[in-house]
Structures are given as structure tokens and as C-alpha cells.
Length: 157
Image (cartoon, rainbow, N blue to C red; front, side, top):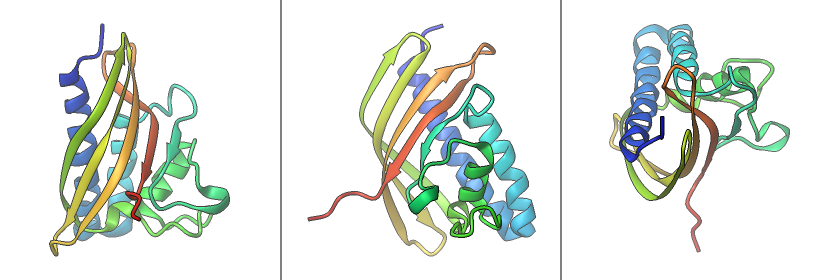
């Protein structure tokens, strides 16, 4: 079944809702609660069951810039993993809203790519803007899985 623009919108919204859910779980249940939600969000959104995911988080660097494993993704989102000592938990920043704007997308059957800008707002009204690219593959069961996620802060002159 060919991926549609509506499918891409649903997948982005699910990712955004997942980020907010991790933040909320941290506020109510601490790191372990956030980790439990993050595991579910990552398993639902990402294609780690299909193989390595090409994941370059916004605020990762050095030898651990790229996160092709599920464990690396979970650590990026919630931190508190000695194998990833520089992760502070990107999803724990009390996010309460995510808006996305599409720059372009490409669909070819059961594979699609999207790039654009996401504006993340925390509960203090502080805004973080990130440029994102997502690559999706439709799995056998019909859902979209992220197999490429590249994120960076916008370039400023």
C-alpha cells in the first residue's frame, strides 16, 4: 500500500505526541516512568525491529553522535544510561507542544521521506526549533516506521 501525505502527517503527529507523553511521564513518574513510555513510543514509531535505524539526534556528539540501536535512542530521549554518559534526556525538557512545517516530502510506494521544521515548546513557553528529516518504511502490518531520523539546530549566520 502506497504511503500518502496523510500517512506522513499521522506519523509526525504520533512522534510529537510521543515526545510530549515522555515528558509528562517524567513529571509524574520520574525517569523510570519516562523510560517505560519512551520504550513504547520508540517501539511504535521507529523501525529498530527491521534493522539499524539511521538516527542522528539534535544534541548528540562525539563517538555517540549516531544512534543506530534501540538502546541508543532510548538513552537519547531519557538519559540515565551509563553506556551513554553525555545524554541528559532530550524528551525530559517538559515539552507540551510540537508544531511541524513541511519543507518537502518524497513518496515511492512503501518508502517515504519528509523534511521540515519542528517547533517544540516547553511548559515555560521556551521554544526550541529543529530541522528534521524522517525516512519511513511501511511495515507488513501497515504502520509506518521511522528508518531515518536526522535532526539539527537551524544554521544561523
